[in-house]
Image 1 (cartoon, one colour):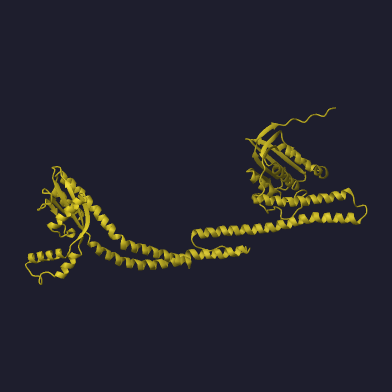
Image 2: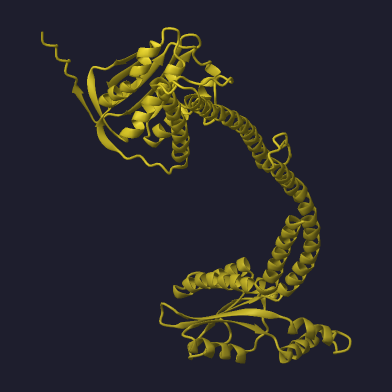
Length: 503
């Protein structure tokens, strides 16, 4: 209903503007246009009079072309003389004036500096005079030849523009130019326009109502349907459909909302799965810590270093999971800012290998680092180390039967590229675009990794995005995967070969 009201208000404003224009501006604009036309004709006549070139022809031509009455007088005695030098009377533009009026117009023009224009009309004296002239020319009387009332009305309503100009001629003489143009037909035209405006207003109102009703159905109703569906979506009703039809923008909006609904539904499902997996990861170390603690408390001789180490390892795993959750939350909210400095990336990778010494010894993993030079980068050392650590963890968790993980460092075009390769089960091609998503998990069955929290790739993505680094993955099912990232290189130094042991 509001949209309908807006259209009706808009239509009413347009009508008001049209009526105001017709009532107050048409006559001034018409008069201005007439004045401009008269001045244009006066300039043409003035040029002809100054140089005495075809004056009579020019007067007739200008008068007929612009619908004017033109009178040209000689002012040899300091005032307009009669008879006229030249004249052309257009009945439609004629103003009935006497010689005394011409003298008055001349004096007015002199006082104005040689040029003047104004509006004049015939008065009652003019009417009586013209009436008597017509009666005498017809040889009749006032009662049988002319209806004085009708004649008086027609003449009184005559209103004309008067333009006067004193022309300095080339022969040191002066001429007085008098031009008149009737504007009385404007009143008739205004009456016609008024009647048309009434008809146009009625038609316009009817069309406005019809268009408003159509627009309301075409625009407002689809938007209202989309709004109701959006309210259902806000209640987590992902079965709702945005199918309102209307103009193109509404249909595009509905398509976007349908896509958003699908993504929200998938995100919520993945979030539930993640919570279930994290709950499992939290419960497992807590159960083991509680179990081993009770055994050590209740059974003599079970307070051994091995049992204590298990408790410590599980507590460390629990702490790592909690820290990863906090880091992921801070990184994705932008609260954790990178603290950049120049450091030796190669040395940082070697330092990370120390964390895997126990895994290599006890589980038989083969972790290889291929590098031939020391590389320096300007980045947050702690966060880049976390990226490498998480990628290695991911490779260890998905390593194949050979239990081999290969880290390769290469430099090209002032950028260093780190690749982490495993020979595990690989990732299907249709799932590669989603592995960096916050809640995505390739294998739907939860599998507790050997090391890590299961949130590694989400953390990797957030840290690399903060460093404006490029990253990606190559994978083939049954052959393994290679995760990589590239970052700007600040410097390279050849690595010194290790010293030989003395005999």
